[in-house]
Length: 617
Image 1 (spheres, one colour):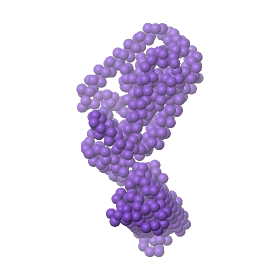
Image 2 (spheres, helix red, strand yellow):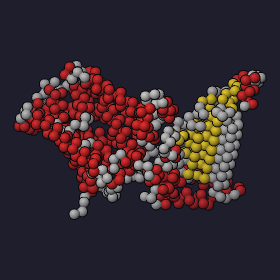
Image 3 (cartoon, helix red, strand yellow):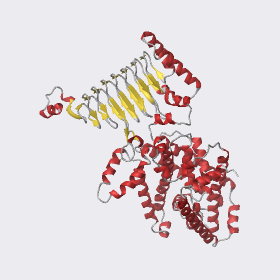
Image 4 (cartoon, helix red, strand yellow):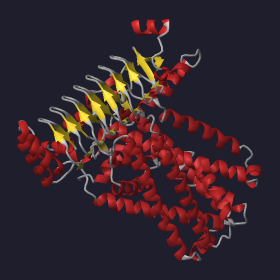
């Protein structure tokens, strides 16, 4: 008989063909969990009567229950936005509606499998089937879930601090909560560590006795290398997670009001975080048995009967089951490609080093070119045009083909009239030389009295970036390349860039007004991760801190400015210097790496012997 899609997913996620020993171990643990759940349910039901539980459920206010159930929709959207924030931090652009649907389907798998991790695997698969790398998909879902758990622990700490009843009954609960908070905070620091802090961490592991942890930490942190330094994504995700926990508290409070439990609202700020925190312990099937005993214990502290507490637990769980059924219906009827079983092969998905997995970490442009799921015309539009639509493609091709190569005054006239039709915005009196390459033109904005010389490249490529912004009175010399790798480039007023320069941005490069850049300068607003020696640098990911060149700067010929650098105002950087860090304002800096040899505010003061030696070197 032909297998259904649901059967395929069960097979994929439950029993990988190459892991029979692990499957046997999983079966044993599942049976053990089932025994624990059964024993806990038997124990708690022996203290009451099913009739009393039914009477409590029957007397519930249906409108309050409906309102409580509707809060799950708020939770879905908040969770989807949190997921999207973390996905965008890894250059994965997924629509919120798609993520909400994925959450609903994941809820179905959470309830047909003996662990809630099954739903996370489905969500990671949904990211992957949209064409994003497997490793990024798994890492993003894992981090998103972890941040949600961390927010729960934050609420649990507040709850433990505010209550005395629970602390008396469970004396060491506060210690467990604090230990979990500290450990989870350290994990978050490891995930979002900036490159500089990562080097400090490596030095710590060189201390005798700490080296045994190096391999484990490296294996962990490498999986999330693309999130390093993305602190804004962490803050926004945490904020959404805290709001989501507040929504959960309101949800449970409305259930208690529907059942007439008469427990003060503020008590749920204590009960729910601690109860959900304890339920994270994987001792039973999806928390069955543990959930009922927890609510009997916590609600009993405020005078709620055992039958009413169990009714409270079962009503809440019934809503989750209803959501699971809804997710199953969505899954059955949504359009689905054939499932790739290799995606769910456990740890091998994270550790596989074959050539196919390596391709997933190649530079974004190469990834797009190698994508077999897209047609050639789709690849061209995404890499060059950056916009969908036949008319956008036809307009771009006609203008570039008919005018880009035309020499002399005729070419200058044609380009000045027609290029504004494809660019984001163009001011007055702008001159475009011949054979200027333009990519993602709608994200290129140019002010007044600007000259873009022959054979330049204006590449604003990226999924979520703003692109290239050029102010008034700017000159961009022949053969100069301005290229964005999902970053931004800003040239303020009166910036003069010489011939054959390269400005490459993975994050942000800002060159402020009245700037003079000599030929062959190189500014790179990004860096490669190179922590491992067993994996080629090309596949280890990239980081971006950005570059700021303050106003009134002169960069000599062949100067290189590396990621994370800031050159202070009114400074001069000598020819062929390499700037790697901060240069103070009014400095004259030379050398590799660039070092300040004089403060320009000293005027024509004679050099000291030390300064003369520095210049000679």
